[in-house]
Image (cartoon, rainbow, N blue to C red; front, side):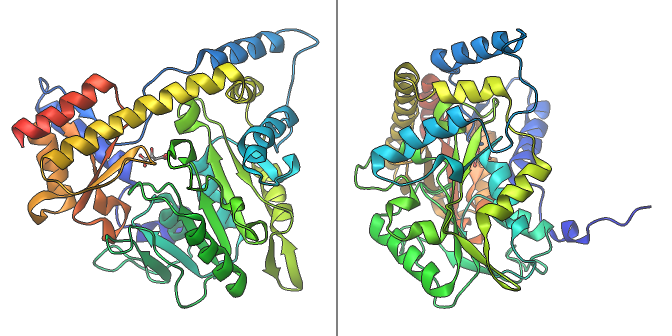
Length: 408
Ligand code: MLT
């Protein structure tokens, strides 16, 4: 038998969403007549924008012609898409990003999970808690941690506690670290960071020679005009930050798959003989392990930036945010303490009567037939909270709130 990666044995639980899926499946099998409303995993439900579909169709047709056929594409992504990204996501916010600093990929989950590979095995990690579990799990798999303690925290990670007192937006630690994961708008709490808060992080990263891994997958949901959409809106961030962006939640690409990562040329890491370009390392990794996103999908992503595509995306984002308001106001009306749901498609709520996150998950499932996500699945600071996703059909969201009101 081949020896396996021993670090996988340290993982305290299955990956959160398949784990939820297993419990929901078991419940559904035991209660086949229950009609479940799924507000657990943040998966979009509205169809792809017409402009996106049309561009994909045209690209498929093009691939069926001799002149339009394409084989392997550029690993970093087609220039037409990288330039559209610069023109639409960064230039309007006066952010100076070059098309050559963008790497198109098949998802932010993969990007935020893979990025750790280009850093040292003994890189010191600082990871907020609660947060998207991919950051922790992928570092555990890579052997960058010790075992987990009773609360599920792994030895070797510097956890940055998010709580009600700091608005789920932890400040930089007193000590240094090599890599810090930040996620704003935050999954799962819906918290956002101001320019001043991000500036604190950028200044801290510069002072500590750290790299910030900034996950902005939910930036399309920011409604407050004063909240930055990109870390590069903060002066100096080009020297210390990598940013992750995704078409999943904005243009409805969770099944279609397209995202990108920004690595500025100025960003360096520490090599044995001095500074090493992070862009060059990631480029080496990307071109060795990835052959690019398919041409029709990249044409679809490009069309998300057309006037028609943009308008259709706005309609979808507004639709989900109206759902978020229904959830937030519904729970508030029941006396449940809520957070988020204003600049993010997630409502984060305190479990009533101090019950644990998983206990509340079970109650919600059994009494209201509503699937949520237990806060503790995002880290030990999430214990005592749960998350409801706004990515549902409006009538289902209304029904879910109604069931919580009448059955819980
Ligand atoms: C979530 O529900 O947290 C997200 O859908 C997970 C993801 O984007 O991978």
